[in-house]
Amino acid sequence: MQHLSNELLQQASANDLEHVSTPCSRDLTLFCPACSQPGINVFLSGNESLDDWKYTWSFVMDRNFKAKHLYPIKPFDEVWLSNGLGFMVGKDRYKTHLAEAADTLEKLSCNNHQAVNQANAAQHKLESTGIGRVACAQYGCCVPHSMVDFQKGERQMNMDYTLCEAAQHNMEGITRAVTLHDINCQYNKHFHVQHLHGHQDSCYVQYV
Image (cartoon, rainbow, N blue to C red; front, top):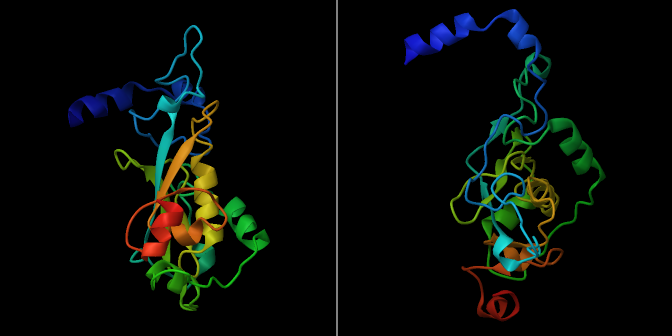
């Protein structure tokens, strides 16, 4: 296999490379082949419509607080190899969003969730206190260009951005998406979504 790869690389001339287009946002990734994607694995016929419930997407929103990153000693030496071309969002537009979004101190109306508590705690030595993402709820495939860094734990503004980016990926014409999040009774203050487990009994009546 390695021999074949080397042979193919040797056969590729400089002229061939001139016709390779510059990759755009999320171009270096693949997504779940089972999720309905118009023009990729969904082709309508007759009176079919993408408004049908069977084309509904299911997103799961989650975070990882162990993926921390310290401030670099020499930030100008940092090199971005694929800024915004993979699963992580492009840094410039994301920074603009964070600068413009309102940051409010969240008050818990449910159990003592780590995600909300860390959002209210400053960690000055860390450039990133974790990462958040949106993935396909059926198979766990991360949605391209929908993974973000946290600055103070999981804040509303972080997850708003990742959800909006996920909803722009191959969803043109699809009108429904179910969003699953383990702290939806807090996040749902601004987004109407579906709820899961791990909360006070009063949360179930409102969000299940």
